[in-house]
Length: 270
Image 1 (cartoon, rainbow, N blue to C red):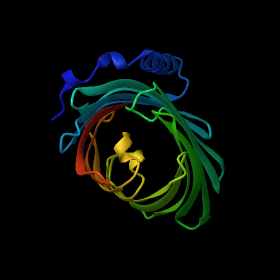
Image 2: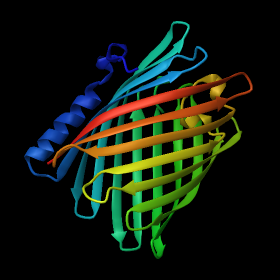
Image 3: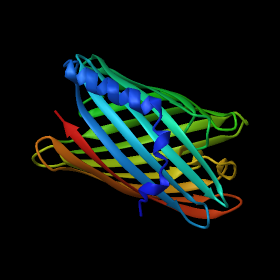
Image 4: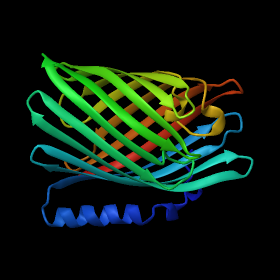
């Protein structure tokens, strides 16, 4: 159950405030921002591994061939045994269509130096439309976590589109600064509503890239499986409900446990 009193709202720091102010200012000036989302997420871990709460705000704008997404979040990670951390995060993502066959996605994440979010991350993907109804993706990323642990990754995948249904697969290989390797596989199915802007989506994941889902020392090595279900439900012409539930099963040399997540948000389009 989501407990708002467990979330330290103060961790929505100046980054979050600046993002909201920028979004409002840009909208007022008709600069292209036309969507904003606010959400709250709660993850409960079994076997005494605590819980995690996150408040997130995000705004989206379109500028000719570029779509810009700006977001900020504040969160608290309780590891149990009276060990907890609070942190804040700022994210920016740019999608750009270079021509009908090539597009890119570039994302940057900055956060406080706490084991709540990835502290630094840069991601770049190339999307190629060279096969009918199919988009091929290759990309790379660099991530730095609390404790001065860094991870580099290379990925490849594809998405196949039908009229309302899309299916995708992505494989990512990782190498940590310790010299060890890990990997992750993600399959996704997305079904758009027959009318309106709603959609239903399912993600299934499996691999050894445990750090992608949570960060603490004992999770540097292990195996995981994950499943997430998301529903975007239009409420009115401008408002929509965005809700998801998911579960991650962790298996490490030291322990086995799982994390159950629930997230709910509202989106305003104007």
